[in-house]
Image: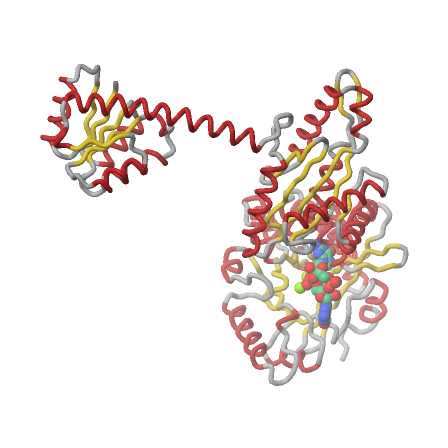
Length: 571
Ligand code: C2E
Ligand code: MG
Ligand code: MG
């Protein structure tokens, strides 16, 4: 029997070792004098019993028991017998409660007594371990579905209730997805229950493959399943997960040399929008699922009309976006950038529009969808090429050196080919890089990975100017301005003072201007709509402004007619 004896008192240790020798037990004793020393030895050796003194320097024996029973090592490996000189009943109970198997009074230590304590503690400990293993097994049987290994309805229900209770405080959304296989009965009737069971297992494996792993996924019974998505910032995510689930079933399953096609109908309810309790959420997800079945199966239904509508629009937009470049539906509009001191045109910002059969869509209707589906990468290339080509044409035709600002989204910065594409486009069109401003938002800088940093630095190394868009709306951290080679900040329109007496905004603009000038940055004021705002910009010596006061974004033709075909100066 391997024993770890932890006691700071040398005489007490000698007493114990003598008693052990006399006991005729075959023991091997290692000695430690402090809790820390004991824990260290325990971590690197296997012991059958720890004989532990309560009164130890710095940390007492109970603290050591607690660490032994909660640490990362498989702590169920040793029984613990606590020793103390104190006859305090409560102390002995506390030790047992903390995880010791027996308690010995030092005054009572004898060969027979210590032998009995060691044997009883080991036996008791072994029984406790078995009991715990049985408990774990019963628990898992009670909570999991034996066919698929998923959680069962009981566990799912409990988890959902818990998550709802937590979310009451956090105000995040929770989505409940309930689905069942379409015509599963037919599979059972045609191929038999064994094939039906296999199909269920395979369906589960495919669905698990498209989940992140932090969702609760359960088989409620038969061919009915549920998934809970917690901590959602937006409901759109629930729709995306649901679509992934439907799409992983596109490929048929090969089971018992038969190819079986499975589809499912899925209903979604949302907390807190569609219910505050698990019962309500289940009821509403079920209703949505039956609606999905009634509408023709193999589809997704939200409980709420409005969500359903949003979801449909999104799916439609995604599909339309895929063809938009090919069909030549994108168009750039250009908003003039003006020097307010002399009203001279300095350049433009290129702003994308999506023209579907005469209906002009602004970026807020599609850019975030394009970003999520990564279609923004190709759209972004199109924008860069189009804007640079247009600038080359204008500068040549009108013999000027106007600038062009191009918006680039965070996702584009993860694409290492962006810098080369930009460089090629500049060369192809014979445009000087200094005339191009690449506009980034702070969200893009927040990604801050090595890849994005390489792209950002690469753009600046080409000699294009990096411009920080919408400054003052998001996190607006000065550290970004110092960390990246930013040359321009664009003060967001929301910071423009609205009227005389809006002293707060005036002071804000003034301080931003002085900060930018200290950092050597150029400033563009966005959203200048009124003469009052223009005068503020003039007063603070802002060199570039953009806004409806001068012009809305215009088409190529309009820009040529209104600006380029005339004198470039206007008033
Ligand atoms: P942004 O880059 O901050 O562009 C300025 C937005 O403010 C434009 O909206 C512009 O039309 C609008 N605006 C300009 N002057 C005024 C004004 O005086 N008052 C008001 N209220 N608004 C003014 P737009 O064109 O709808 O673009 C919205 C956003 O979409 C842009 O914000 C930009 O972040 C993004 N975006 C536009 N084009 C592209 C693009 O080609 N690629 C990417 N990734 N994003 C783009
Ligand atoms: Mg911009
Ligand atoms: Mg902006």
